[in-house]
Length: 193
Image (cartoon, rainbow, N blue to C red; front, top):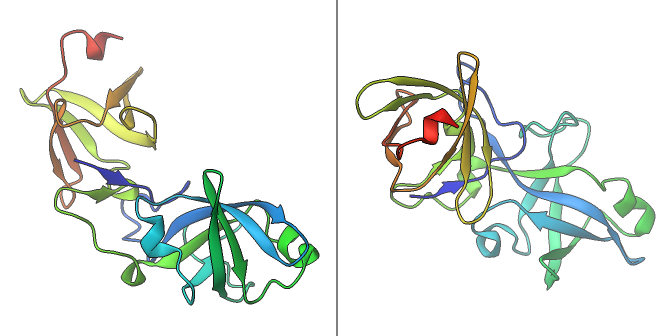
């Protein structure tokens, strides 16, 4: 069972599915020829970050939908660098133009992204999902998903309690995206922390 990130502020329940998903964060300008250093925020960066791919700057509030005031960016070329990528977009010609987009997220249309594997979900599909135990006890609702090692964590708020639940096959037994429901089998003591 795996989850794929959809960015820092994905759509919440009741607002429908997003048309775009955040796939990376432009950390900073690199060099003088318009390259930027990007932290990929996808499980498949080799399929998302390819020459010719059209990306959009996400909205300034961090949401996945494109900023309507900024034209699309087309990847000219890229190369691995440290734990990220150095990307040159056709539209960025110098350090000044690259610095203007530093700190922003880039998104891609959902239909342009690789399909999910069996059992995978996007993070935004987990947000606001009701979490219940296999016995039917309501634990709360998912407020956030954290990408951590060795397992991602679900932040679940129930009443006055906040739970961090590992998103692993041993604990998460069912994810029903349509009903926005997650069934867990927590080990003894997990919900008492």
